[in-house]
Amino acid sequence: MDIIEDGTLKGIFKGFKNRKTIFIFTNGSKWQQNEYKYHYHYAYRPHAKVIEKPGYFVLEVDGMNDSVKVSKIRKQAFDKR
Image (cartoon, rainbow, N blue to C red):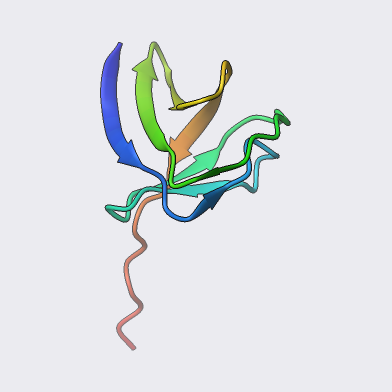
């Protein structure tokens, strides 16, 4: 297990919701929830980690006893028309 991201989530965190949920770190790194899991937890700018497991990544947030599978959102190339 390797820690891929270790930092603070930007703004208000309201837990895990669905596959459309985006988590943004203060350094600009973006991760999208990759499984349906609902677990409400309110926190402002909580510390979080993305950990690489065999074949997938999980997000762990301080104050929660649960983690959620996530995938990295890559920066998209701009169309140069």
